Length: 242
Image 1 (cartoon, helix red, strand yellow):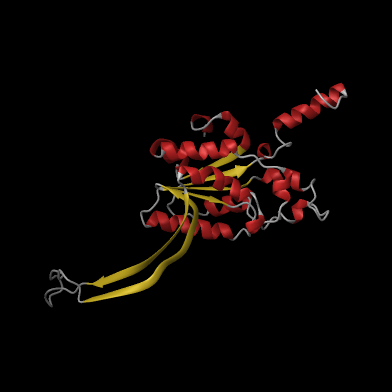
Image 2: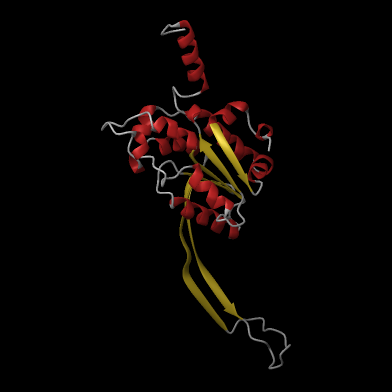
């Protein structure tokens, strides 16, 4: 699929994309404003080694970088809950093919039938989640939330951003403040694209279209294509600065 029809080259250089259920086409054609805002977020995202060396959870500065860009556009974290109301309608006659009554003879409410489904960002009918470094089971929670929103008619498409596999090349080189290689923190059982793709391939998103976005090395300062080009030049010319 030619993604260049839907976004500029600079974004394609920074991220990898996997399109499920025509999510990208839906974003581009039906949610032009929201898609432009997400692209602006992708374009402006810049991470440093200090960012990726920070502890996870609430201490990580990376989710805050998304907050700073998307919140001014009106994207907000959302949690939904809902009760299921079951109505039982009897037939008007004892005959097998009699018409059903207009009013139910019994109504039952199952409280909390839908509950605890959180989405990091929601605007209009587009859901957006970021998973930088959580346990990989978090993807199951995210996909269940998005398919629940979709099944309830609350969203039309979802976007999930996580780490591309190529970031492991950085994690295997760089160490944290305690002198431990970062790969120990960003292990195989955490949230990265490989753990998301097989869940999407097995349709755990249900019918909800999902655009999976992987953060590549180009987003990390000092590790993009320009840095490689600079290193080649310095190797050729034997100088520290060009």
